[in-house]
Amino acid sequence: MTMLEGCILTQIGQFAELVPEEKALLLDLEKDPKRYAAETCLCAAGEEAERFYTLSSGWACAVRDLADGRRQVLDIFLPGQILGLREMGFNEARSDFVALTDIEACPFPRTRLTEVFEQAPRLASLFFLILAREQSMLVERIINIGRRPAAERLAHFILEMKVRLQRPSHEVRLPMNQSVLADALGMSAVHVSRSFSQLRKRDLIRTDGGAIWIHDMEGLVRFSGFNRAYLDCEANWVSRTDPVCMGEAS
Amino acid sequence: MTMLEGCILTQIGQFAELVPEEKALLLDLEKDPKRYAAETCLCAAGEEAERFYTLSSGWACAVRDLADGRRQVLDIFLPGQILGLREMGFNEARSDFVALTDIEACPFPRTRLTEVFEQAPRLASLFFLILAREQSMLVERIINIGRRPAAERLAHFILEMKVRLQRPSHEVRLPMNQSVLADALGMSAVHVSRSFSQLRKRDLIRTDGGAIWIHDMEGLVRFSGFNRAYLDCEANWVSRTDPVCMGEAS
DNA sequence: CGTGGGGTTGATTCTTATCAATTCGGGTGG
DNA sequence: CCACCCGAATTGATAAGAATCAACCCCACG
Image (cartoon, rainbow over all chains, first blue to last red; front, side, top):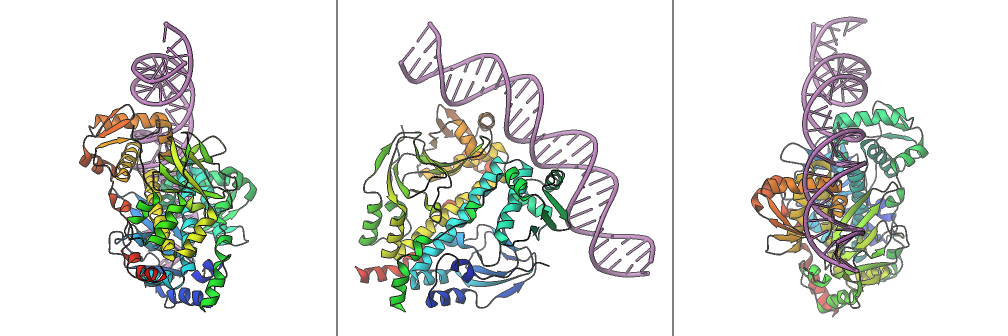
């Protein structure tokens, strides 16, 4: 079983060198993780959303249910991500947050983030960057759903997850059934299955139980029009001046 | 002709009371607006993207062209918005930015934003909020494109624009042809036309040239499943503590 | 007057959804 | 070990939705 681990510290640390004060603030956000079973709904759309969650192990997702039963998966969260960030400006949760696997997540009050921003202004910039990266992912999903036919759409999604998992292995194991996949890709579960067959027939992937082997990476990339650039976000602009400033403060 | 005006100051001012220093920093971002004709491409995907633009009048959009000619409109920008924010972490533009009407926009170097964040940390929080609101809009667009059939999708889009325009009038005038609309909604131009007829046949709207009259607001809302909550973003959490801090600094 | 872009409409084709039946694999209890 | 059940994946048949292709209208504009 692939149990992923991670913390927001390493996630954010990719963008800039953090000073001890900043690290302490971030660590505090995930100091008391709780365990939740797969399928648990951490937060339902419409409820007053007082808290966010740092995800330290396992997978989660954000989902929106429509009146007529249709549903759309909005995000897939991996360890090290924060659940709820985009809801900062709203008093009611705009979507469900659901555990896809057993997870460890640490709830913290939304207002805590405000305090963090005040105590370490540079972190506000870094969180800005995180939102910007998430936006880029959403934008690619819009392109994917809006303009790519089913098989390419699925292929693109597989590649996105492959890159996000940061594993050298060509095996991608997604802890979700084809029905969830369908809701993430804006299609029907049956058609996800058909699209898998298509990718197999073209010898781009092989599947075995829950696992997907990327058999022809180059072909899959070409087929789906995938370009990983949108996942590779940098923050050269943040680290330049501020660290000095923080150093003085410490 | 509907010529919209606006500045980022009022846009951001909705979220919190700004102190003079903050206002000055923001005003500086749009102090030297330039005029661009409709159709002008401010920035093409792939080029090194050194600058963002504050949009002070007219409409613009972000577009992505795919290899095979398909295209997807990613954002519609109204006066007071900043073009490019989400690209903060990238060195190359991830999409085209194109003027939909004649516009006035003020280019400023991306690094300027960093300076702003350093000089007025609270603005970093507010820009964080802006990104969060934009994310909410993207998320609704994903739901719209992923899970709603064409006519509902169009209806939802019309209502979103109606709310964003902040006009009491039930007339919505979109400065874009049905082909652009199609690219925004992930469908074909012909089908946009048919969807308009459907909405007309149901007596939900009337159209005349470029203008759309919402004839049955309640019906349109019901039909499309529109809920404006995602556009109504608040920042009660920002203004609480920081202004004091800024007051001291001044 | 022509001309051309945008909008509408119809005919056709393609894609995807929906419904239904079958298979597969993993548990569970006898 | 086997019978059974269940959820998930696959496959086929059919229907609906949307794209595409093509014709046509309308109107602004030279």
